[in-house]
Amino acid sequence: MTSGTAGDDARPGIVALGIDIGSSNIKASLVSISGMGTSGTVTELAVCTAPTPADADELVRVASDVVRSALVSAPELPVAIGIASMAESGVPLGDDDEPLRPIIRWDGNDDTSDLDALLGRLGREELYELTGVPALPKAPLAIWARLRRTDPALWSSMHRWAGVADLLGLALTGELATDHTLAARTMAYRTTASELPTTFDERLLDAVGLDSTHLPAVRRPGEPVGGVTPAAAARTGLREGPPVFIAGHDHAVGAWAAGAREPGEVADSIGTAEALIRVLAEFPAAETVRPTGMSITRTVTGRPSLLAGSAGSGAFVRWWFAHRIGARSTGDVLAAVADLGTEPSEYTVLPYLSGRQTPRPDLRAGVRVLDEGGHEIDAKGIDSAVLAHAMFDGLALHARWMLEEQDRVAGPARAPLRILGGPGGGNRAWMRQKAQSFAIPSRLVTVSEPVATGAALLAAARAGALTEVPVLPDTDLPRQPGDTHREAFHRFITAAAGQPAAVRGDT
Image 1 (cartoon, rainbow, N blue to C red):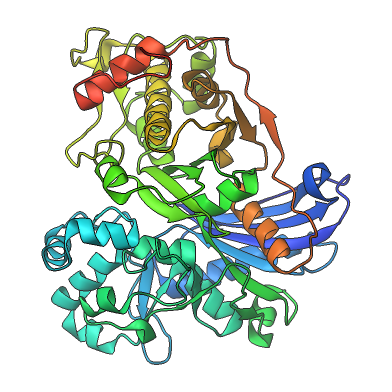
Image 2 (image 1 turned 180 degrees about the horizontal axis):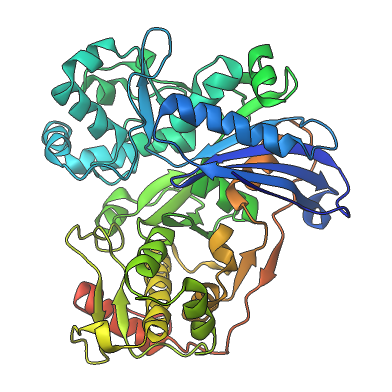
């Protein structure tokens, strides 16, 4: 477990606690919110982290431990608690709400047989129009179908299902509930309904032999799961009674906290995966969006939004430095990359560890290194820093591709692009290339854990502790004038999809 504090100059304001159950780590952020509106400040008083366990009971224990550690620095106990998490991951619970098996994660299944059977029954286009979610095997609706087929004994013992955020909410309050942004990722919730539903869709659940009693209640924006119980207070160091909110899907929580709240505003949320969240004035036509692989979803406040996602972001960086730098240390390579400047690399790296979700979905897409002519090369003889520079370019250019695909569907984004780098935000070489690769200005959120800190901010707002809600602190990312990566972007799209994309300003 690791922790950090804001320093002695931090002054307590409204104190709230946010928890982020991520793919790699669980984070607890104790936050002070001072002032109001644009002049308000959000300060991380303490941030504690620990690796995310595979076991469900252990996950609750570790989350309780990081909360207790964060509270050591509390000037006062928090007025509200917010829980954000990765989507799709969850666990079946028995009659006594005890987990029946380890966590089933979003990134642990590539078998499409049960998904294909569901699509044959429900219809691919019809399912997308109802839910806004691309048909992927990670969706819980497909996971439930697989469990029913492959483990009938467990299936018959399942009393209900809990997403990972919901599981911790249950441990803190004794109530099982979720948020609409997490419900939306199950492929069993009518995200595009005119009014936000408070239950999962019975017809979709019936396709796998479930009904809404097997799923968490869906709280409306602003409604708590419940209050901290005496038993939870004893385990965590929280006081009894403060409201606990399921803040929502990690990327959606971070985007809202960073300031992407009005139509046209967009945030780039980076963790193990990466997501671009675009706020919309109204829902787009499903038939326009579905071929792109993007999701039609909602913000944490219920506004329509678009989500473009890539499974390989922080995960791809970790893989690259584990497999592509030889005997050199990561620090040495990053220092050398920093000396290479912001010019685009002569090489093109396609950053797809496990296919591409959006744009132009392609489950067969893989990692490739190409020269300026688009020919695949053996990169063993190329300096590892030069290749790492190209790798960061590849990740940045893929993010630009997602942004410009959103522009095509929803119109130009409103600058600036808000980048939530989290720990990745400290990777100067990567953030520098991102800023230079995009064709619009960008700002980097400077808190160490944007999602956990954003969950705390959202919880304080939902608890009524704030009359106006500030945004997370950020800073301009410097960039050279003009579109210096224009030609590199054309080469990237040619390599990734077989033809150039239209670039902003093309005629």
